[in-house]
Image (cartoon, rainbow, N blue to C red; front, side, top):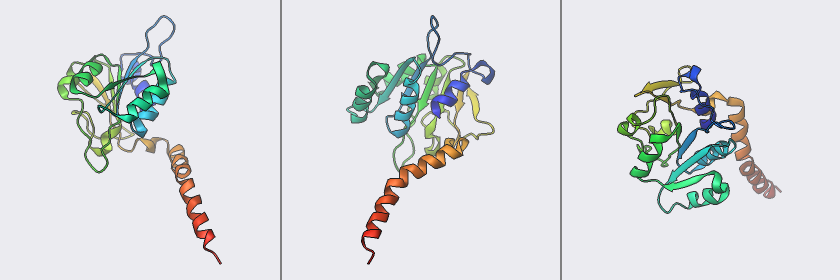
Length: 195
């Protein structure tokens, strides 16, 4: 959902500076930065790669996940090591930044500082998927589906806790399908023990 809500937030009617994420012939596409290479970051990259535009991803140094992403998406996605200098450079020129960083059992690291956000273009968009774990942008605070965005230093923040709640049918089906192999394996194990 991060790419979808980010694209909608870039629309002029929603406070963005009126840029079409994928661009059109003769008009440059949006610049998308995805911070994080786990499940959410990978799915964001898949969604972003589906639209022709420049995308950047950053992950921890020596990250196997980012090498895999590089080989999976080829030239459609450029990966870079996640350092403070790299993040600062990338967010300054970004139209959309997706924060998809999760440290299991811990608060998300604050990768983007308020000072970095102040250098961004007015109307740029931050989507903080990590908000359920405290957020990875220093200016993030939880929002709701009813009031999903707020603005800091001219930059739109989308920080909805429980983002999948906007699409409950899809979310439920995705979760049940994800767990289906586990249930089938448990049934086979149980069925194998029946007399």
